[in-house]
Amino acid sequence: MTDEKIRDLRNALGNFATGITVITALDESNEPKGMTANSFSSVSLEPPLVSWCVGRESRLYDLFQTTTHFAVNILHSGQQSVSQLFANPDENKFEQTPWHKGINGLPLLDDCHCQLQCEIVHRYSGGDHCILIGRILDFTSQPMDPLIFHGGKYQELK
Image (cartoon, rainbow, N blue to C red; front, side):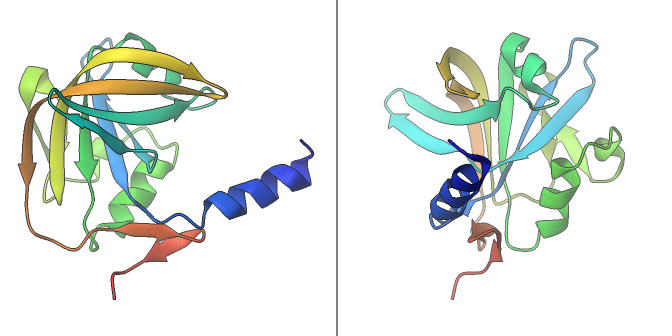
């Protein structure tokens, strides 16, 4: 596909509204790492499974090829700045936002709409991404309006 056609496809796919998550894990030195992702989806209730995708060009791609656990932090409508923080390449993200430790020390962001602590059960190649399937070990959920991304920008429920 040409670059123009790829951009057109990206814009077309942007017509699907998504929530925003920050996926977190510990690196080989037990340091917290995280990235913004909107490629998150539920897979199954029994067993409880979720999926998300990490791009092969992502700075954290190698981490998610070796780690055994990850957390999904689903952001609420007041957390646009958190989404932007974890979308940039800065290394000190966890010094800039409150967080606490979950199962196996997983970094969990404070004040999220929902958090899922997961163990990786499958990895699949998916073009220029890797599809990760996680079994939910524990979760929390609070009634809040979600942070939504649609048409290349943040949106609110109306």
